[in-house]
Image 1 (cartoon, helix red, strand yellow):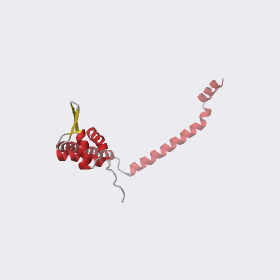
Image 2 (tube, one colour):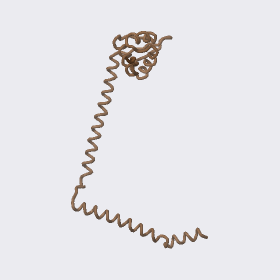
Image 3 (tube, one colour):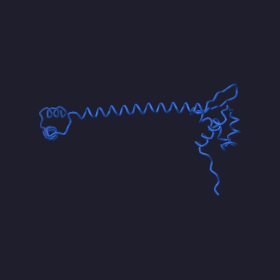
Image 4 (cartoon, helix red, strand yellow):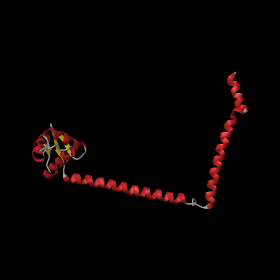
Length: 160
């Protein structure tokens, strides 16, 4: 026994487009404010707002002739818009597939010469041990930095 809720904005937009597609006619705002509530259940207060959102999205065409604004939308325009969108998405899809293929080729090229062999494994172990040794030597050098004659001379200059 609950009251019927109002239509969502998207439902209003869809129903408004149905009016245009079914009649294939040109309307003024005052005509739409009469037709929409009666035929599609869109409140008269929201007709202007819904119509403007459709115009802003390019789904409905609008033209000011004299002092009147006229609105229209034909099914063929919607079909062409969908075709253009489909073509755009198809192009993006094919470009994405091409990019994926190029990246896979790059991965294959990068793997050449990097096969896991005993020689490569021994070189990697040697590299790791040399890096560790380098870090140890740096740490030891830091310990003795205070005794470095150049550093001692710098300290004396600042102290004077």
